Length: 520
Image (cartoon, rainbow, N blue to C red; front, side, top):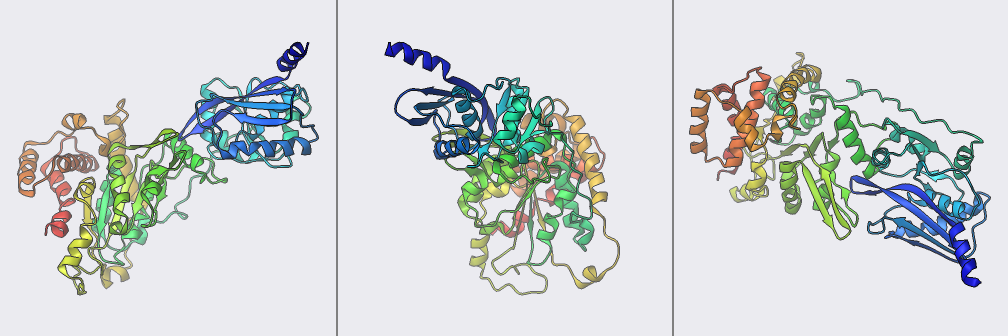
């Protein structure tokens, strides 16, 4: 008789609620199963929960009581399926509460077609969470019709078409909606306005430095990495901060991909639910290797992933820790980075334009036309050798940014604006997109070795000249490939299908500074 009663209770007091989990940049469906049965009062959460998930027990218990419901007595078991994946964060609070109320027959509202996400406060209000965009995409891909998210996250989730998004303030509001008593309005995506030129820094602010501006235009047109060397105050940082204003506008797909990463990292602006301006990340030189590449018990994106589809600016490059710099070698080459931990591996995109700046020596005056360098040759060499040869080899353009003289600074003549430079960059990038249509490649910097042979066709003069320079300069195979890519970009800016000698000459000039400073 006792066994039969237990069987009946178990069958009746059971429920399932759908939610979404997050690991790295990828999301997956999670099913919240709740079982309420007789026995001593116990509340267990199983299914590889982390500490934050385990703490849901206390938040859910308080929220249930403060929302006017009774917390069931007896043995409560909540399972987060699939049980072989680590569950992180407080985002399961809301579905756990609904599953318990549903299992204990305190609510009878339909919940089978929706996904529920949200952290609970003790009074039943629903707090915002990170990574909502990735979760909404996963829900849509799995055929979910409706998703219920915290009110503050609704505009972010509404970016995705084809799924009904409801922003919820508290538990009572949600239950009234599900019961049909007081319907919530669907969240509607409002495309954010693009930042105006008045808000963003402009290249017209930079006096002189024509050669540096030209190099940055080439770098932006082809997505190339660049290193600027010059004394303090020459304008290296000023130039770098203006690079996003000449990069091509982001496509919607790029915006979604970048927003997804920023959402997971918790740095997405509430006012701008969609990233429409290419990111510019400038970490301090004290940043660790994990800070740059990503990591943690459950891997989180690092600076190189947060700069995806934008610019990663490393100012004072030799001051960065050696292990941090070397950790960038593989991701800037491959465009992705895989972070492996005991809990699993997460792969993040890291397609960035690496922009770095440095002084030529500790005092900054080595090679200065008027100021005397106070460093010994050994100090200069030691300073420069903080940057390894393999790292230097992965940077396409090395340019010198000389000090600006008084005449250039005081000159009131009009400087070229970012909009004018960007127009030429857009033309060159459109050529590349059309040329590489269907390959997944959008800029010359991402060309594969096989594609180099097909698309970087040299004239006879250009081929002979490059062959001679390869031997005389002692280039590596990687340096050769990168010169070809830069030559291709210069030719595109010149509206030329063939790569001519003058294009190769310009590309090689952009890579000779390592001979001047490092050839000791």
